[in-house]
Image (cartoon, rainbow over all chains, first blue to last red; front, side, top):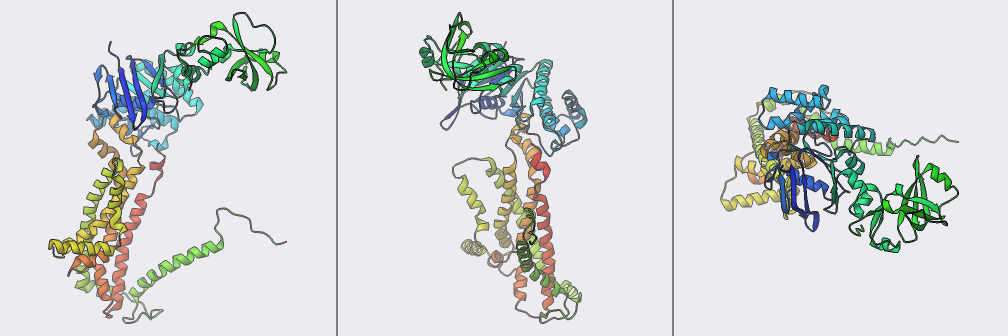
Length: 343
Length: 273
């Protein structure tokens, strides 16, 4: 089966900034694919290369197996939901949604019918006569979605589409987007800097850093087996031991260990069986409800955190900031990393 | 203990307010006096207050062929200069709004120069050019002279609007299948239409009362401002000049006020994001 989207050694260079740096990956038809990374990591540039708003400096972008270098956006079977929606303010909601069919020469009655259908799909059937300025942020979001879907694209690109919405609405929209994608069966490419959003919605996630892809994997694997220190920190908020720290702890290889697998123990006492321990001093304790996050400055240098349940926290009662403790983790829970990956 | 006036952050002090009113009066009282003397019964001196009021001078003014001639010439020049300016100014604005190239800033300055230069320089330059090319002054040369600064007005209005448009509207339009021409027609044009009209009206008003460039390019033709200028040296029927002034005020004020309302940022453009 041909991939819906394929990047082959794609770079996009602005002056001396390598916004996208020799990136290769493939997205399968019908996949919900997230591009995750901090700002400036190259994820949005990659999205713009797919849409055709930008062209690669080198390498190839393939849509449905065909190289699309030199194909303008209006000839690509790809549509975009923009971060700030980019609705046309001088058109009504219905006219905005009907814009795609309109510029493709569909008759007035036919495009109005299809636009109404799309508005029903996103549950805005009654608001077709309004102007974008008269809608709430969440409603504008839905209009942008309807407008992008009306051309029946093979691929829908979403550029941080929920970034401007408040938390509750964002969670509702996540569920809705996911079910919409299942229903329509089209490929979604979803750009976000929010790892929770990427992990909860996507079939696979590509983690971007400094113009490169660090890892492409399913959410569970990404979380359980981060390939690099960057992924471990950015996706799992894990503690990372780079080569130097691992050596200082007497371990052969860089590794990551998630905070919920780390226990805080008093300074003296035997190590639990099958565990490694590292001494340090308590830096801060943040209460998070069911658990507390203990920040501990290891004697070896790094600040690590441990998620400690309320029950275990009570056992540690009396340990204040500055107290000497040991952080201990089961050897089996440590995830070996491919590279030192300091960032 | 005396009462202290409460501090009101949104109220100007009486001194500032008095200053503002004095400034407004200084600017506008002369205009009202000109309008007032269009109705005076005294035809030689500007006595204050006027000895009586009459509409007779309007009748006299409408009967004079030289006024009608100058008026229609001025309207013709303003209309032609505005049309040229709308075409050239809009094209230039679209060309420069999104383009990025090394000499862009210098080119932008060149576009705005005709309005930054004193009119007398533009006038002398045009006269010199006409002499070199052996073109005789005529209605056409007046129109071309006016078109220089009118183009700038239109250009400035249109480019200001274009710069305010988010870049991703064009991308959204292309993304949905519109080519460049359709994007221009359906997305950009509706957005710049009011700026286009406002620029045209301002250009028209500017051309209608322009005198400096006109003097150098007019030859024997007499536009309305030149008619005024000549009239100053002929003391007969003085109030007729004021009557014409009232008409000029009306002709230029209407497009300027309309242009103001057209370019006012309205809520829809600003918040629909």
